Image 1 (cartoon, rainbow, N blue to C red):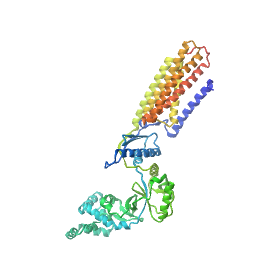
Image 2: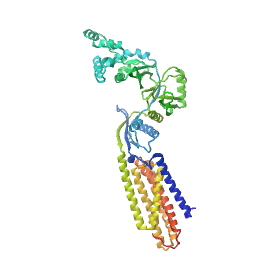
Image 3: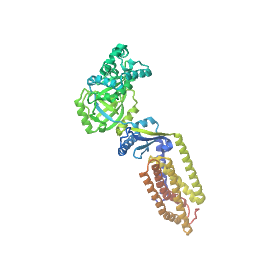
Length: 554
């Protein structure tokens, strides 16, 4: 089949058409002829580090943590759809992440940093927590002191435009009147406060309990949105945590609740221990509830997780179930029936579907084992990428023009044949990059130019061999056949050794090194095919209309 000039040219044409089709298909799918790397199209460069505020983590523990973070972030970025990201461990304690072509930088950072630890907890009645409020108020007064609480109230009120009553004593008029009387009364109140115990002071000020109102669902209080910062400060005190009822915690709800033209956050009373975590989660998908038009994430648990969920839900029909993500209650639906391995997380009214997709993505990838800090962040702008493209294109164009000029000048007709084969070679390389969805980087352009040189070098070897055979007096057709045959071993050796080197670079290199190796590998294969098949086919086509003894210009 390969002995026929026509069949050889048909094969060359089919290969070229396939390469052009790959380029066109890539352009149709992505809008670009080739996929460009960070150094060509711009993107984000992040350096991540495991958070260790106390400095108690050993070097081995940090290294193990970074390895786990590496695996999870790779999965998240693959789900996110970033092509050819660079994720590289540095020094055993840091992780370099480079994301090319990122449009929404905040979204990308959120996906990388989000912990995504999912828990399922039982919502408890508030009665035990209500009984502990007096202890909590006393703990706040004992810890901060009466004067500090009053000063804190004046400072925050001045910033927010509210008075002391609105800030510390809630919206109950009777409680506000009594409390203001206790705080601002004259000498009699001051003398009574001095004589009373810390419990009396706590009962008078009620610094924490006065921030709470009964919630709209069982097991949750309401806290005005403007009061949340001071409530969080009180809850963070160790003395307050010790005053909680045993095996109970409180967590904030994720959504604002509007009542009587005022915004509130829910503060849920929950069982401290989770009965199920996201480790049993197998899949999560984002969608929109058609009935209430709100974003939601539907999740699928493993078989073991489904059995555990079914047992728990069957024993707590009528109770509220808190779905907790990163210590924040995303939703707390009532358990109306036994629940199996499927469930959903309601994202609330007004939440974009894109945010639900991001949550589903990080849930599928798994929770980070520790908090991650971004210690360095750089954005590579598209102007820098365009500048690199222009410089690389100019270098490639100059190189090709010089090669074409020298080949034609030195080898004449054979040089023209080599230029035609070189055009086929370039088409094959570009089509191969598009077909493999490989990323073209600045080092990749260097690999492309290097492989062009190798393709020309193969033609030079062949032409010199042909010249040697012609000098021995061989007829033209025999000289061409012997020239290709004698040059074959040298071309194979050179290409195979370079290909092995490129494969080693791809296996053990990262980022730009791998981009160079991919382009070089594709170029070597295309160079081998171009030199030994395309060039010979063109030569045979050129000789087909000539006598075997006619001389050729070479």
